Image (cartoon, rainbow, N blue to C red; front, side):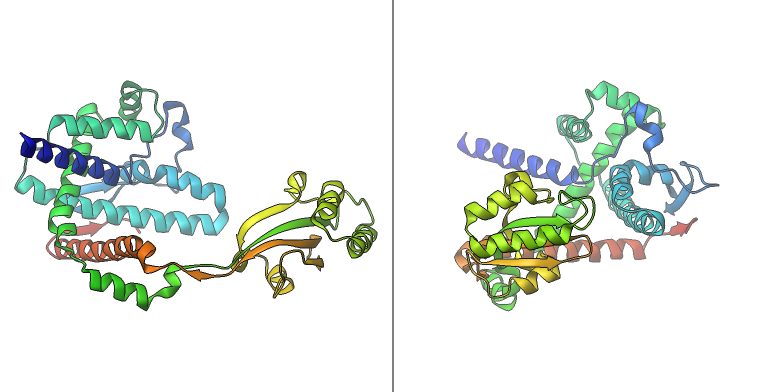
Length: 345
């Protein structure tokens, strides 16, 4: 009985991990009233346009959009113009390649199928619904039908994801073995990966060149702040000046920036803060949009994480790298035997 329970728990743990892995690339399904927010294909193309065929099975633009629509909307919020076009093009190419690889692996499953419990498929479908923020399975499936995807096809898509991930784990992931010696050697060979960067905590006082609290004379405001700090550079006085005069976004909290990585600061800040210690004040630092004063609260030097604490992360990173390489080799092997036709650039 104990052995049976242990096997059951192991299988449940496996399926939980599998669900998380499969849901890493969920269906990017929009709500019915959000249908027009899906990225629009270029003029002259249709959402059912066939982009690629894999051994005679088509991959359409709709397939791609359903899988990466959320990511495309995120890109549109960050980029514009030619950069948006290029980023979207790259994302769609990556998505097409991922779908090609998945279809090729699924062909192996269809040639030699194995049982996938219905409950596991239902659990995965529920996970998809949650990931996409739908109110219920019924409303999610209703939205899918707007795009010609029936509930039966939805279940088949879930079966495909599960089957493919099981085969990849069997034929790729489980073939990767990493010894403790390899973990230690990788740690020693790449100390930069396991070094916590130098950090600094600051208070920032910002006086805008235009449209700031100083009105039309920021130079006079900068001079006045410098004179006050020359008399008293304590944290209490610096905080008072921030609250009274700063245009910075964090002014209401005293201009505090905690645990910032020094290398990520503006270049002019890095130069001004060189060799500074807790309590030091620098400024004014002139930038195109504002003048800045900085007060150092504290610093934390770069440090190497001990192997005893980093070993698990080293192992995980090394394992992920090897698995990705193994999967890519596996995909390339399948592609060499497949007939893949591209219909659109």
